[in-house]
Length: 215
Ligand code: TMP
Image (cartoon, rainbow, N blue to C red; front, top):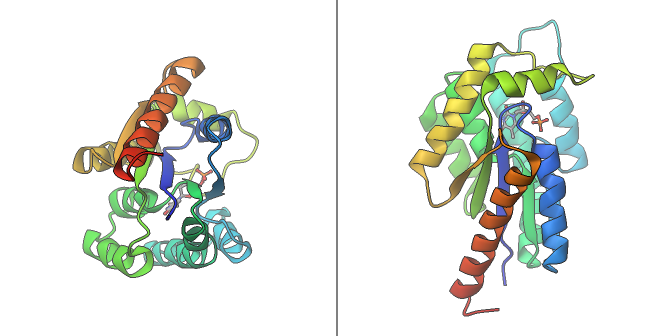
């Protein structure tokens, strides 16, 4: 039986790293075999492309270049890692996936949505996430957390207006596909955030085991 695919999304400083650790704990305590991965990245080649995308540089990065690099990394990631894992029946959890492209390269960079749709159809095809959790925090909170970090990448350094578009973009994704994309209020306490994640994961597990005739 094919595995389930969950992506985790959110703006900078939304607490994805902590959420991932919690999701991992939940999977282990539920005895679910899984693969944890991330985008851009996830394979050696895709991780090299990640470096290309995120390294701050003097040369301006063209929006089309950025978009194609993100999708090049994704094509490799799907073929070499995600698809094989799903075929083995593993749950795949990806720290970011396709919604980030719609939000960063689409909404925030003003990318052509039709181009994004075509690339998605071509590169992602059937490998869309079954569920997506979006960690939502006001931009000021996210940016404050990022400022406190030692290392800031090329996209962390974008303007507040850019990060506001990112936040709005994720909220719009949830509005457009409410069955797949669930918003987690990540401005609350750690316990309250974990509680929301646990509620969503339990609901997904039950829904999926029901649809497969019970497990
Ligand atoms: P993060 O994993 O530390 O959040 O950093 C990844 C960065 O890459 C983040 O700024 C969002 C960006 N990104 C895109 O712009 N488009 C994409 O499709 C993906 C997956 C990530």
